[in-house]
Image: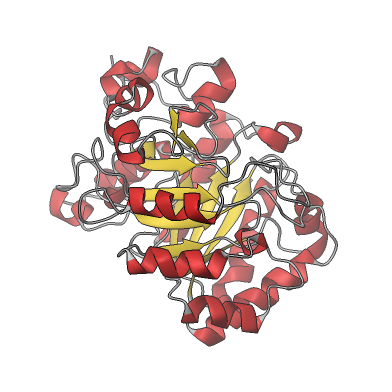
Length: 376
């Protein structure tokens, strides 16, 4: 085919890809997440084939109301310092009429905030300028193809390729930090080099390659094989050495193992490795450094891991994250099963817990994307 935050840039992906893991710094992910994702609404005007939320045109009954939403923000602010970074997602968070008031509330509580709006015809320069004026730290946009035909085949709405490119250009004019998210699946993987070339002159901060999880509408697409995934991750590592922007993976923590092996083979010292962005992602995975709150208030280890451990309407987010049996198991890689449980990289990687669950029904099972065979 080919010839882990934003915390540094205020984004991350489940996923991680940023922050400091238990072997890479003082932050204790068993007590304090790096990232809180809040799905503000399921309402969205796009129809993406891989949508985890199975978004629809109108909000669902029972979404957190304004007062409940402010209570959620207070719960997030109850974590220890440094506070988690809040990412507003959906659906399209701009479909919430109170989104700007809630951004202001979050900022007043000391939270840093990013947002992942849908690239529709309404996402124009003025909207982005308003988001920046309200203190949004960074912006997440999705680009799943290098042409309108390829991107819109995934996103499901004619015109959204052009809207995405215009939003990227507007964000650059405003000096906003931007993470572009790109799907990695059989339908998109051959086009990744062309997407990379398209992004190079657009002034983005980070490119996150999201390896498909077969949940929601994502079941309609085909994941790459473990061998193709390994090849893709090696290509990502090569591009990361020369790219004008940072590159990370989402729901592919095994990239950390690939990158570490490559750096060791290059003769890099431990101190040199510790200075890399990959190292800062060690240990972050679904439920460990990451927590997701749905539009209905349910608390999940990640948006792609649809197991609820509580609900912010009746439980406190801090208590659920620290003490619920589900999160406690995900904090402890020695609890993982099969090869993920015996792998020498289980602490820094740990595999995608969401993909393990999607494949087996067990969030502690092995990640089927990983081609690596542990030494023991």
